[in-house]
Length: 418
Image 1 (cartoon, rainbow, N blue to C red):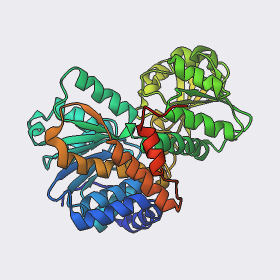
Image 2: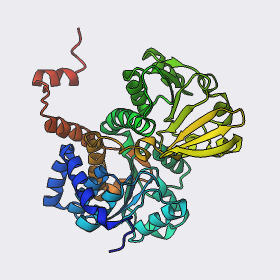
Image 3: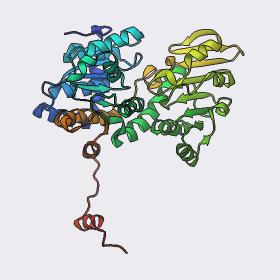
Image 4: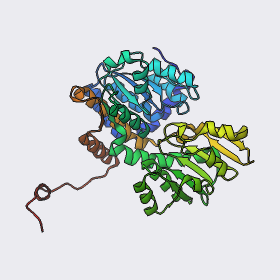
């Protein structure tokens, strides 16, 4: 079996952590049980470019048990958990190409290795596989039935491709499922981002000013968690509706040029490029801590930061301190990459349970329905979204009300008014 991981001797530790995550993933367990029985992915080749974590391992096992021939590579150079990668190779027989801290060249070599089996379905976390196939391996496009995408950043890229009519196969936006963005983005990103910052810095959040760039679902979650820990939260936005929502939720809203002077911590979650630029770094307090929780590190203008710095040193693991020409020090976490995965363990498994249930069921849907789909970006079918919510409630031991026949008639009627 072809693979490239750091050290297979880490496999036993990874196996234990994968089992620990599975306990909090009841929806995926139920899907895996059905997949074992029905084998809906029998013979389907899947390339998954995802964060190689304990939760992803349980998705990979589910797809494998559904009959898929799956290869896994990392969607971020710093997010791989090496013991998990080793366990998937050693214990599950799943080819993995991922090493924590891999350089850019190795990162793309791993993507090439993961698509070497001519995938029929792609699973992306940032659209790197789709982009690579369209730019470098067009010869493989003829095999693709469809793909899935899990991030806001990736969906933006794919919708742009579809609008320009260059997307060559249909993609399901797992990110747009309500059981994904309302929970994974908000509660998962909110908790894990603060977890990464605290692990990396051991700084007190209470009483500090935290600047959150972006008030989408991720920004809402980060802002809520920072406020819950006692921070004074400032939100920066370009969308007037989201800015208004942030203000109504009780946060100060202002441009980054003003917030830069006030913040102790800066967190970007926009999905856009150069949200924090040299002029902002130069306006920051001495000792400001800057990080990113959006998918790509381009949210921070790191080359720009390097140009205005006269000195750089590592002061803690994954903490680079830049001394600017004005004498102030700026502390950058995790090279500007996803702080929740670079400095912590990513989202709790209970929220990834729903996100990866969407991945598994979307793969099954693509196998069954790809011939009906155009080369566009589609939402997760609503009936799948609702089924995942139902299974999650079942796993949590929570029951809901059901409509009576009278209520169903009322909702379906236009004659019944006051």
